[in-house]
Structures are given as C-alpha cells and as structure tokens.
Length: 220
Image (cartoon, rainbow, N blue to C red):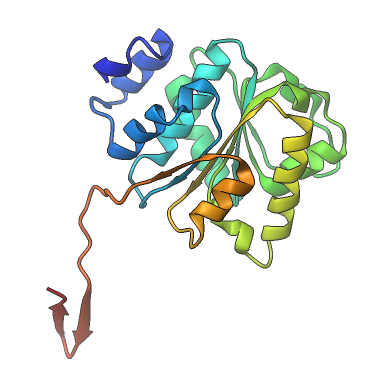
C-alpha cells in the first residue's frame, strides 16, 4: 500500500488501510499498472475473492474525490446491490455520498444528483436513462460487476444495450468490467476498448477431486 499512497487521495488511503488492507493483491497491482487510476477502461478477470471489488473502489472513489464526476456500480441482483451499498456506506460514507437505487422503474430519481457513488441494477440504470435522468451525464466511472452475464439469456440483452448506450452517452467515462468467469476475455476486452487484466491468484487454493462412497480422491 505504501507504493500507491501518493497515487490515491489521502481519505481513500486512510479508509482502505483502516479496513485492514495492508498489501495489494496481484490483480490489484496489475490493474494499477494497466492504467486504473488514469481512467483507462479495464476488464478484470480473476477468481472469486481475489480483490476485484477493491479495484473498482480505487477507481470510483479516486474519481469522486478528484472531482472528475460520479461513479455507478452496476450489479445483477438487488440483494447484491444492498450488500455493496452497506459495505461502501460503512467504509466511505463519512466523506462521499453513497446511494442505493433499485426500486421504481417509472421514476427518474432526481435526488440521485446529490450523490457521488450510486449502486444499482442494470435494469434500474437502464430505466433511469430512458427517463432522461439529468445526472447520468455526470458519471465518470462505470463499474459492471459480473459482466459475464452478457451471455445470460435473461439479463444479457439488457446489459449489452445498457453498456452500448452508456458508452455513447459518456464517451469520456471509464468503464471497468469485473468477472471471475469469462470464456472469451480478449474478445470482450476489445468490444469494451479496454485493457485486459487476467490473474489466477486466489486466497484459498482449490483442489479437484472425486467423491465416491464416502471417500474423496484428489487429483495430483
């Protein structure tokens, strides 16, 4: 963390270290080296619990504190949106305004213009755009969590259209896609015009095995 102390706002650094982060994980180091804090689009493909959320936080909160604009964190489920809202509110609520928007699809939620970091579902953000919410043009960072859902038969089309519209509305915004599983990361990174960050490090090593008759035989 000492190596990035001068690259991120002091309030962000203090919040992260107070939360117990003392050392950056490999994917986070790679993302910083790939232009995370220089507004470069990134597609981050790393295992679960490898630190993808902090990558998004570094970009979003830095942008807000540096007065570049708002940040939106797009998730697939309302439950996940609530979880992220509670986490971000606890960590950053003392110095940025964090909002959760997952409800009425027939409203433009004008009150969100007063907030810095907005957590929402793809369907909600799509609705806000269609209702011409004026604050959307103030977005500087767009984070798409679980971006592999582009391939989902149900949510995929909405997410693809949402990203396409946002890229046209916000040509200068930074887009960050997060996923643990993407079969064609190079192709998706090209579509996003993004740098690709791939890493296999995980906090807990996985072992592959077969369970039969009460016995697990692990692959050597």
